[in-house]
Image (spheres, rainbow, N blue to C red):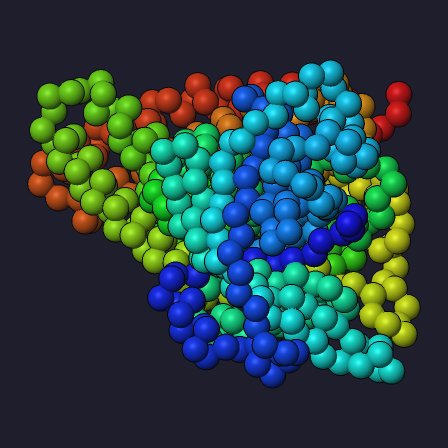
Length: 516
């Protein structure tokens, strides 16, 4: 069977799975009795994970009368929603069959020797209870069908294993908004949260080692995308970046995961600014409010970590036996631990889970998209290149106006505004990088990143001074705080000069989307 799979995944605790079974929120739409079966799947790849690198998974599943070989592409996803290509082939044995792999048409299977190198990498053992759900009517045009699966078991990679406990909603007919409606019913019944990992991705991460924060990358856009498709592609990548690092934060408490979550949200917020002419509407206000809430809860944790590593630690390293500096560092370490605890609590909360689901629903089915019987919003169906270049030029024009001829003459507050606009231009440039000559855009973005970095260091100093001289710093810490503040202030003139040079280099770069 070949087809397109659209599904939404939610993770929950084992005890909540039992509550969900007892108080099943699917009964209103259930057709027939649920069915329970055990799924044993073995995933294959090369020793260097060539399939994973290409965004493809290959597995063999045992069934009553034999086996089924399945090939899936990674596809696209946001807030638990996945859309990907899938090919299934019945087999007589648990061994891989080369013919069906080649029949997918995926280029990597034509590489000499790849199929012969495929071997088991990890396996999943899942007890699945399946519900067939449907509603609406064909006459009204709102008929839908969904398969809901309650999955509980584990993924095993060598000596390592990890529990799996999730709800999987697969769209069999109708609009994806039905998946989000059912997901909200689940969240109203038990604590659950959108999952960004497929089972295969969880297996690969388990085989590769412990949880690590992941940097985000803007997806490559192609010229054949419409404006609406390009926005969805970018927004999905931002939400994936957010939820991958949410998983890492809750598993490890790693402060870098907080940073990456903030980057994901800021990239999404930049996308909203770039695409505002096509996504503006009543729901956008709620989306922006959601983003502000998450950033407000993550910001203090990240800011306190930067304060420690960029402001306090360098001076302590220069004076290793200074008791006042040690006491000052201990004070701010306690502050950082407190703020990290609050950030983790916010991310673990039901509000964050509901918010993540809501963001994904807005990207996929929000009020900015055309509705049956209504004319589509202007520019939604335009080619992305014709929309992107003027938006990039507008962002650059704003940056040039903010910075003026000499960035070094600006106040710290104005330099901070320039830095914020640098981020907006850089994110927009990264979004649209594949639509312009690669070499010019690479230089353009590299120079902009250097300018943003030095402006960031200047802003760290500007923010640090009032924190260091606050009334809460007393006793021996007061002298140490003065030492730290003075050392960083002595760096400011050199950094301003560096910023001025970086600004001139970037300003002299040709804009990659301008001919000639």
